[in-house]
Image (cartoon, rainbow, N blue to C red; front, side, top):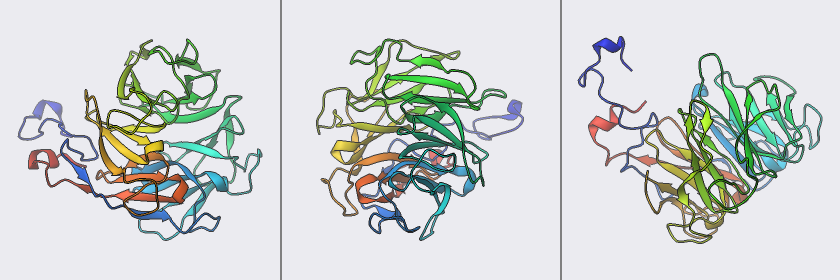
Length: 343
């Protein structure tokens, strides 16, 4: 970024051509993953995970991993290079007390390190401040699944929550006040582009457009925002060609993330792979997994979530292998003009 803006030129501050994570369109990822967290079998020791669900890479904390350790009812922070994690929420048995979590699914993290945790079993969103020993219920009585924080708009930041049962997305103030505004899914569950079916872990971009994976519809849809009003009909940005393993298909879509250039990345659960869909593409490319279901470092076993660090390395929540895999990015095909913009 250059200051003041009046001084910017193509030499001083070239146009922004790639996302902040340094991913160019021709970047690739290692076909062999590296286990970054867990991988020591299912268990509750601090070097183990038990069916990890959601995943967040915290750029404000040295790219530490925030892992939803679903089977252990806890959220674990795993620093880069560490051999074990630290419990930062839950871990006090499965239950509905304020210091407990019950089968947590996904997490959003704000710039202060506050966690927003979805608990499908307890039908609630739990806000857990950094260093706290218990959480605060801010949303309740919703079969909540996916969750995302929108961009900061002035003094406001909004929380977007996926209601799995009612097939809709609600928008809340970050403090959870109010009943929530239904922004997607006013027509109930279904297969049309005006409807959702089993929404999972979404992505909200800087324009507040919502990218939404639909598990049973085997697609990712984009709902465009205009002045905080969302379109009533979506466009398909990945899948939508029935359940299958072809490159234009998905098999159980659980999570999506989007880079700054608009490229879509999908956790293709049933195909045990991560696929990449360039803007406007009719099919994806496999960037991780896709070598059958298994526990080799070239394989995945039911990926539930994915995230990138600031350099563009890919992290995958490898649910049935009880581990987090990292696939290193290769930027050798990126031009120097593109790479200079990587943060």
